Length: 156
Ligand SMILES: CC(C)(COP(=O)(O)OP(=O)(O)OC[C@H]1O[C@@H](n2cnc3c(N)ncnc32)[C@H](O)[C@@H]1OP(=O)(O)O)[C@@H](O)C(=O)NCCC(=O)NCCS
Figure: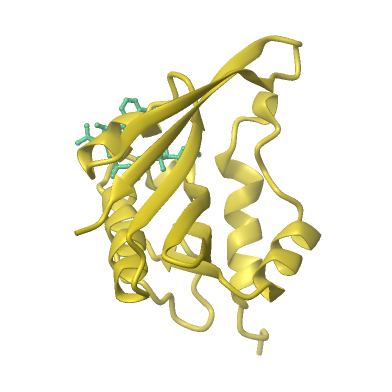
């Protein structure tokens, strides 16, 4: 019998297919494993049926990684595998992130995204608002520069 999948395996399976190669946003396994050893780093998963805990041998359809400090938390990575997109899983996973952070007592959530990423529509729908721009922050593989937009959600 196959060994159960662990969450790093699940995250890396999605990482391999979810991020457009030209932006260099995907993390390697070492980066993910090391981040998860740090206090305050959290992961969330979603399975294809929308539940937050895939079965022992079940792959995930999406994941997030976040890091909290005091009453703030930053969303570091957020992705749904391409074959499961546009079915509402991004909405569910983002709601899960916000709710889990709220339960940890967080008051302000942050994230950073490249300008014009369609993910911005999803973030706006959940109340995130742009609060800053880092001009030409991201460099694509063909040398283009893209602004980073910092977004914030204040939790009541
Ligand atoms: C962004 C992402 C997580 C959305 O996941 P998803 O499961 O498709 O999201 P949902 O199905 O819940 O869609 C949420 C809404 O976001 C918007 N949206 C998502 N993808 C979109 C796209 N490619 N173009 C336009 N709007 C889009 C739509 O408004 C959509 O609602 P609708 O389908 O009812 O129109 C997914 O496309 C992804 O993993 N992208 C690559 C990784 C990435 O860029 N992560 C964010 C880094 S900041």
